[in-house]
Structures are given as C-alpha cells and as structure tokens.
Length: 255
Image (cartoon, rainbow, N blue to C red; front, side, top):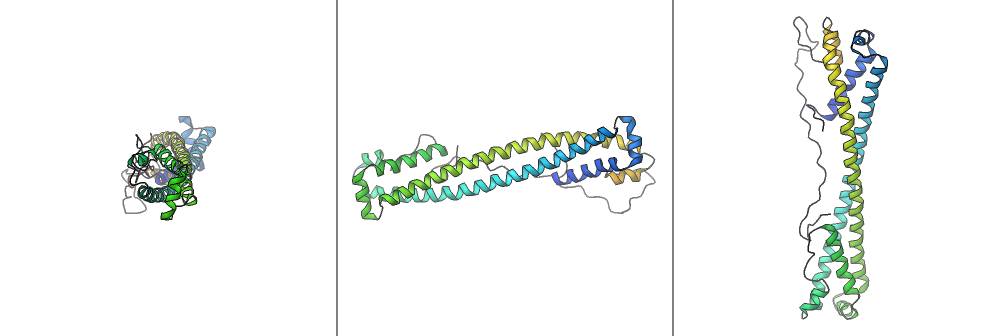
C-alpha cells in the first residue's frame, strides 16, 4: 500500500508539475540525461502519470457506484423488513393459540446465523409457509392481510435480496479499482522519488528551476517570489468502504 504525505489530488498535482516540468524544459532534459533519463524514459514517466490519473478517476467512479448501490439496498431492506415485521405480528394474532404453528410458520424464532443471506431465506420461508396454509390465509383476511398482500411482502424481500447482490458486485468492483489505483500510484511515487532525488543535483546552480518543478528550495542567497512559507498539505483521509454489519433482523446486514 502506498503512503502519501498529502492528499491524493495534491499528490497528482505535484507529480504532474514535476514530471511535465522535466519534460518541457530543454535544460533539465539535457542535464538529467546522464542519470539515464533519456526521451523514452521521460515519456514513460509521463505515461505512468496518466495511468495513475486515470486509475484514480476510475476508482472514484466505482466508489460512487458502490455507494449508490448501498443506498438502494438500504432503502429496499428497510422497507422489506418493516413490512415483514408488520405481517409477522398480525399473523401471530391469527394463530395466537397455537405456539407450535407459530414455530412451523417461522413467526417466532430466527436463523441460526445472523447473516443477511440467512435472514432473506428465513423471511421468504415465512411467507411461503403462510401462503401454503389456506386456513391461515383465510383467517388473515379478517385482519386485512390477504394472499395478495402477503405475496407483495415476499416480493419486497426478494427485491432487497437482489439489491444486496448488486451492492456486493459494486463493492467488489470498487475494491478492485482501489487496488489498481494503488499499484499505479506506487509506480508514480517511484518516479517522483527518482526526480526529487536527481533534480536538486542537476539544478544546484539554478534553484529557480527547482521551484518551477514544485521542489522546495531553501538554499542560501535564494529568495522565493512569495514571502509566505508554503503550508504543509493535510494528511489524506481515505473514504471508508461501506462495510456490512451483522446484527439482529431489525438491522442485520451480513453476507
């Protein structure tokens, strides 16, 4: 994993200034040649920058899509869970005098594990068992709980399960994009380290050129164009991936 002392955007801006500054300055190109930085190698450095820039753009896109899928799932799950809980409570009234039937219909009890996949199966099984019992369905009608309403409740569970599946796909793609970005940034970081080390040696007599490259110059006798000391950029805070929470059926979100 690469480590930065600045934000990702700040690092890209600095790397661009440094690499393109070397590429576009004939004097620097001439002097850096003895360190093995000929035209093809400088072009390679430019390409590494572009790859890192694109990888970061792709990562932001995938991360945004993952967040969007998470929001869709959260909404679908909250709705399915709320309807399921309401239907469960009403059905308990229908068979209040038969505790064994409540267990058989999955109106009481819960999955052995607290994973989302098990809760989906548990909730669908409740609907399936109730809908298969004509007597319970008929008695449920006295409370306004018809077969159509029960089927609609089951569909909400199915919809939330599908939303969860899509979110997991987007989450995996976001993680892959982050890994690709990290690989590209490690390559770019090596280029930056190379140029940061070499350029001060080839430009000792003209520190102004170092300033143009974004490399701080503190040598005696040289004054910055601005009297202000550049501020240290903030330490980056990477956005946290939306993890999955394993809780009770009211807030469960496991795999």
